[in-house]
Image (cartoon, rainbow, N blue to C red):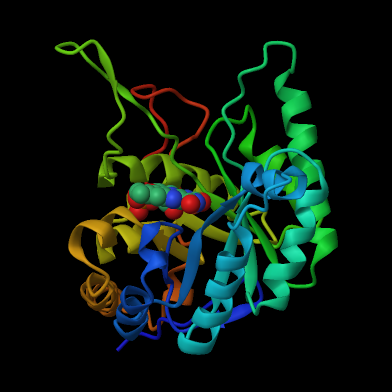
Length: 305
Ligand SMILES: Cc1cc2nc3c(=O)[nH]c(=O)nc-3n(C[C@H](O)[C@H](O)[C@H](O)COP(=O)(O)O)c2cc1C
């Protein structure tokens, strides 16, 4: 049986299958089930900057942070895998001190979710990025536990942005978060706010980014988005992922489905004679794949040539 042990953010995990930030982490029993089935770590849903700022400024205390901190403490006691807290913030500010509370509560690491839709026409892409790098630097400076950054795909150069994150002390990146994309109902002329689960069709965008990042990156790589099977996980690992994060598949099929995916991944590794997931990691990085500069149909070198 292949060894699924992986390293992520300086930690050794029993498996590269990680529970992604989602409402699943509100349910400690569900987390237990996922970990018993083979999840290597758990990322909690995010605590949002606007809530933290509201708590700082409101005359009426906002009760959002304490329950989150308590939940980290409780899960840390109960769950036999690293518990990663998640902060969502995109402007430098006093809220970053909450990172310390999460560390004190026993979080093994922090995932900083840079979920931001740029809406201000006067702020350039470069300015947005500088601001975000400042936020990452502030969170890194506030804690001693590792900080990983969850990115959107919408940077002009993902590798250059990741290099800057590495320089300010991020220990990992997760590619990519998934923007909320409301649809329009043509019947009711309303915005349809249903959050559709992902499908595996979202995976190739992540695979491409991982393959670009893996050869030069000193930091840990996480894949989030479109991983629905052990074979999807295998693809992400081949492209350089240390971990794959799972949300939609577990919300749809239940937390125990980690066990099925673990089995699929093991079987595939065995079938290809990889003794471990670490041995397969990065085998299809940039350099082994089609030329990333060529548009489709213009003859990028196919894999295997
Ligand atoms: C209902 C729901 C809530 C989510 N909440 C968060 C969150 O609080 N913080 C975060 O970083 N990502 C959040 N995500 C994004 C997931 O962590 C994950 O990145 C995304 O769903 C892509 O993975 P998937 O294809 O496995 O669903 C959420 C996703 C869903 C479906």
